[in-house]
Amino acid sequence: MQVVVINVIRRTSVVVIGAGQAGLSAAYHLQRRGFASEFVVLDADAQPGGAWQHRWASLRMDTVNGIFDLPGMPRPEVDQHESSSSAIPRYFAAYERAFDLPILRPVRVRRVDDTPGGELLVDTDHGQWLTRALINATGTWTNPVRPQYPGSALFQGRQLHTHDYVDAAEFAGQRVAIVGGGISAVQLLEEISRVATTFWYTRREPVFIDEFRPEHEGRATIAKVIADVEAGRPSSSVVSYTGLGWTDYARAAHERGALVRRPMFTEMTTSGVRETDGTRIELDAVLWATGFRAALAHLEPLHLRGPLGGIPMSGTQVAADPRIHLIGYGPSQSTVGANRAGRAAVAALRRTITPESIHVPDTIGYRTPRPHAPA
Image: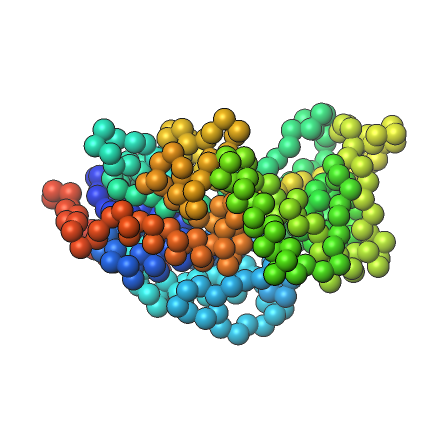
């Protein structure tokens, strides 16, 4: 693994933040649209794989939502029973090596500021970068939604988020509440209910659909998400737009009687929760499968949010600052959407930045060799 040491301000044309599906797609297209020596990818993880390397081991390739090939390199055949947390990072690592992408890791971006000269200053835990444009591909994994519920501080059992989940075996023989109405909630409910007594809580009655047709429901969903993002409204979870599909794991939970939704409890107690009718449920653990939000805290100094709480967008560009592109965000959260967004962002930058006319000087007295992805 490469050790990154950056002690001075560096200049480049484009900084990409994040090396998941969206970031790798952007890097591929930057390399092929004239920016080959004029961009860098900063990734907070020590190894390739994006958020996939952190997923729970039981999330196998046959249970994840559709994973699309990265541009220019088809995904190899894998055992469908292999964990996605090993198969996908292996593919990403091979991709980084194949295209010799300029990825520096682990580098954590702390904040991005404007400068009087019109450049963006990217401050990291390994130095600073001045750049003319920024492609943000930080996803959501590092920003889990952890609700503060009445009485949550009193509960003496275990509380964890999907982000922290490892394996169902740790709940064997316990009484576990699973909170959330999304895909992950149903997946975890199905497997935990095999070894524990489970209680499924959601704020709204879940809506299951018999069939999701991409040519109909898919297009309509994307149109809704785009409308929200362009208007500056925070985009919601995918399930809030599409409903839940009758996947194999949903049917399995239903057949075993585990897929029984309970209205959201009103408060937590020292030993469990109190339901709307006053019933007290004793619990050993509460798993908050309550989703994630876009990890954009490092962009807060730029004041990009509009009055509705979201960041108004035009395609991949931030409407208020076209130097900044958000990919893997809003309508491009899916893997195929992330691929397309990476290409679109680079195409837009190519219209505003002419790579051949730019001379990007090294900082005086300091030269960094072209970085390589770890083997």
